[in-house]
Length: 444
Image 1 (cartoon, helix red, strand yellow):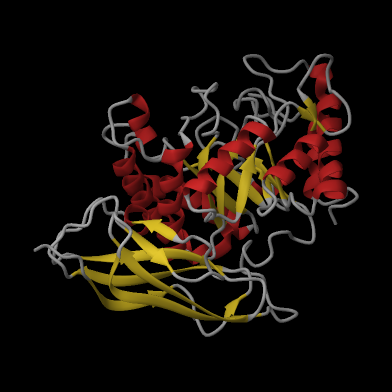
Image 2 (cartoon, helix red, strand yellow; image 1 turned 60 degrees about the vertical axis):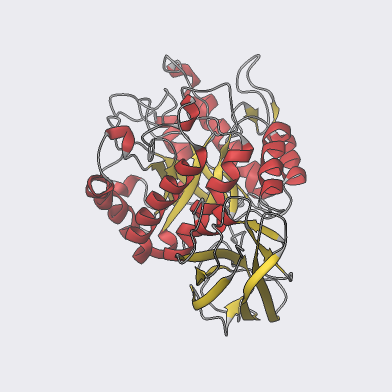
């Protein structure tokens, strides 16, 4: 008669479990063996017998292991993401494997952590410890691929908190090592000036042999490939700690913009997000992780996030939610018949839909589209930027800690601070410098 059984072998954690700071994310890994005579398949899962560090009661086998099946005698790692509660104390979680019929079997595994308060004066190591900084952080979308879109003289960007661009691998038909050769000097150059890099990981990073969005591939297999690549990339930059962050996907909630990114149904994005976040946390625990830049509106995007959250048992393994609220004005319409409504109303809607995560605006600006905006619009765009930052700093800083402008040059959808030939648009550049140097009210 076949039977289910599992055996614990050894355990490791990404942090010292005797002193975990409140509200800090960490991973723990159990190495186990299928000690029975039955193959574990996709219906198998891990049961969670407690709450405190994790609210999920049931974690699918694939999400915890990246394995679609485990044969008798095989060994594997179970890696889970935890977030320390905001209340200090001692917490213990006990887990056990369960079959597709819900019946538990084999050894129990546990994690026990002592959660401690952050002492005054401690250096904040990441967003999970302090989701909202004392001031609004400002950044810039750049492009290493477009002319005049990655300022080699980083002096012009010195004072920013972030630059953002996609980590391209398959999109350039090359290896991850080849991508490191291109991006390492860029990352290090900005880091030396105190500027962090937010890498976008999406289909440009991993397309896979059979891209599932084209109807040929398997989403489960793709999630494994994607998480594996993310792990390699995060491990490579782990020495830079919180100076390198990762945004998982880009506008994946929007079916209407296939030229921008790839739409992923929530049921498929959920395991991809979980596996990828787990892989990053394991090798680079200080890196911030952002749920991809959502680009519809607070109702549609909020529903997308809720569906992903439900699929993951009520928990999102990220530090923040990235949004792209294009077409929303901070004070008034910049142009007649432009846009969809008030930025403040949109941000309030997002805060209501997603109250438990800070919002990072990872793209916002006024995009020219196929043609550059007329020169006479410079003062209007400059005022829009100033109004944008003032509005967020003064009204929304409690839940919007980061704003990243799109974009540096007109070679990026004609949305630039500089023209396609690299020459500056003076009024817009002056507004940018005021924000960069924290000269505006609410930014100091």
